Amino acid sequence: MTDYNILIVDDNSEDIELYRRILECESESDFNIQSAETGTNALSMCKDRQPDCILLDYMLPDMTGLEFMQKINIKFGHNKFPVIMLTSQGDENIAVAAMKSGCQDYIQKVNISTKSLKPAIIKALENINISRKQNEYRRELERLVEYDELTGLFNRRAILQMYELEYNRALRFNHELTVIMLDIDYFKSINDRHGHFMGDVVLRSFANAISRTTRSIDISGRFGGEEFLIILPGTNMHGGLIIAEKIRSRIERQTHFSDSGSMIKVTCSLGVASIDGGRKSKESVLELSDRALYTAKKNGRNQVASN
Image (tube, rainbow, N blue to C red; front, side):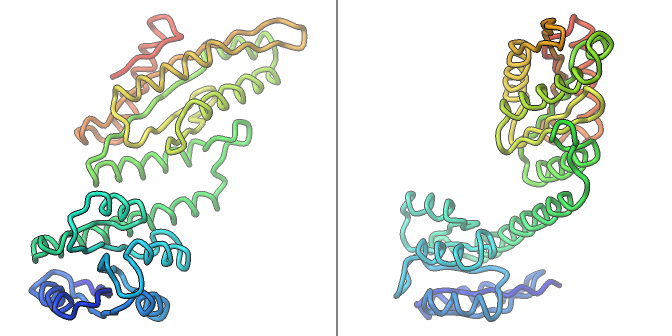
C-alpha cells in the first residue's frame, strides 16, 4: 500500500468532508489528508509539508484557483505538485485556463464521486512522477557525455536512451510516435574527393538543417558516421513523412564549395516508421525505419520511404 499526502484547499467544510470520505473508502492507496481554507494557508503548508497532490477549489476567500496556481508556480516551480482543480462552475474557459496553468485535471463538483476523484488523483500522481523521472533522466544524460562533438546533436548512446524513454511514454499514454532514420547520399565520395575537413563541414551543415526543420519537442542524434536518427513524439506516420520531406528538400537546396572552388551538392535518403498504436516493439520500429532507409537508397536515393 502506498501512502500519499493530499492537501484539500477549500473553504467549504461540507465539501472537505465529502472528499475525505471518498478518499478514505477502501483503496489500494492510503491517503493522508490535510486541509486549508485559504490559498495563503495552503502555500504555507506546501512549504512545511509538501503534498503529493492538491485538490484545489476554484473560488477561495483570498484568491482564485488560477491565482493560486500562478503563486505556487512562482514559489515552487512549475509542476512541483500535481493539482486537480475542483469547481462548481462548468465553464469551459476556466477548464482550459486551469490546464494551461499546470493543473493535471479539472473536475466539476457535481461530478465528484469515488469513481471520478480517486482515478483522477492516481492519474495526476502518475503524470507528475513520469515528468519528474523524465527530468531526472535528462539531467543524468546531461551529466554524461551525451552530445556528438562535431554536429552538436545527441550521440548514439544518448539518442537511443531518449528513444527508449519516448517509446515507453508513448505506450503508457497511448500517444503517437514516429522515427526517421536518414543519411547523406554518397558521403564517402565527398571525403574521398574533397577531404575529411570538407566532410565535416557537410556533416555540421546537415545536422543544422535537421535542427532548423524539426520542432522543439523533436529529438535528433547522430546514429553513426553519416547516419542520423530523429524522434518525433506525438507524431503519426503522415506527420513524420511531411517532416522527412521538408528535411530532404532543405538538404537538396544547400550548396557547399570546396577549397578549390568546386561546388558540392548534397542529398539524403530517409526512412520513416511509426509505433502503429503500440503494436510494434521499440527494436522493430528502428529496424523498420532502417529498412525504409535502405529502400529509399535502393530506389535511387534523395527520397523518403516508409514502413
